[in-house]
Length: 544
Image (cartoon, rainbow, N blue to C red; front, side):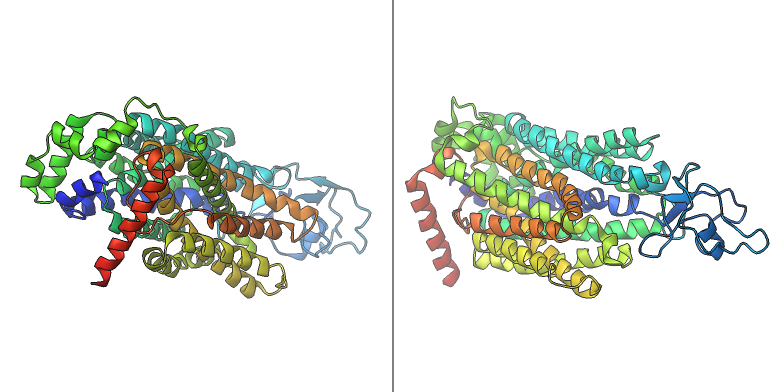
């Protein structure tokens, strides 16, 4: 591929590429904070009905409460009901022996919250409990819907207007809407700004990844993809640290949003993808950026050789293939091979995100401190992505993608047969499944970028992330099926990654294969033969 040769001539994986990857990955540290923030900003504190008692302030224990609040079938005090009239002995506040026939009512005077662990969350801010408890999950689904809409909008716009301007705008939007969410006066305004934050997150992810992969030589793509994955892993630990130090949800929201202003400022320095510029006919700008890269990589002489005529000659096949063509999202399904790729990758993106957020967004169910379990869920990504890097590099993308998805499904399936009392065993299987899904996520970003040609890569990545966010929206809703059968959510969560793992087996391998530039590169048998030959040459080179 001509552009790969151009990259090698101006330094390959040189100083520019290293700086470029670092600057584009810095925002990833904070993206994890926004994705998983509701584990802390929407944590559910202990609560009960407010009572007109002088002794009730912060009091959640004591025999006197039994005279005001009925018991649940499990023997615990109800969180959502109270007696219409307290049934007390006026001398010693002992509880009457028979309370089964006493009338109860909802918490007419509001709720009392235990702020010993969570002093300020959106739950006690807007009373998202009892009859309003579903609004908690709805807020996360609205955020994920924003990410879904963003993947649709930014995927197509980036292919048309370029990666760089959309990347700059997304950073600015992330900063503004994130800060606005922290000042939200009510639940509706909060959800609106969380939705807009989600759309900006998609723009950052899509354009950062394309700007990385389109400036990186073929043999370094697996390493840079894994590095990006580790940034997200560390970002989960950053979130735990911030949440531990900042117990007010508004301040936590603000702390996770402020860094994006810095990212917005330096993103103006980052160049546009020269690969995209050349294929779009903007040769002068492409040459200017290539010379800038050559200068940073200390290959000034090579950079001075670039002219419009030379660029056109070096990439004439790709330019001829794209000239006069207007590509759209429909090109993802027009031709048979690209259609098969789009279908299989859509299944993979959906199932990975679906199972991932099904495990990661309800940490309180494990009965441990959410700070501890979030750290465990974050740390497990370190060995998972370390192993995934070597599998991607030496075995292949397809093997890792299929294997990690199927293993994740099996881990979730095993939890169906683990007793509810064995919380440690259930948590261990969930952690293993989450590690497999992290490896799957680590691979699918790279695999998708390598399977789609440059002319529709952003549209393809947009489709993939759209399906991932759809999975993130549906995941919380599946929990409701437990009302019909207690294990039904786990059955659904396990089937999706297993089936998607099987679908991946129908995709071509991309290990050591140059990025395809045009749809013809993907569809034509001659391209696949040349790709196979190139892979063999790389293997022989490594062997010698």
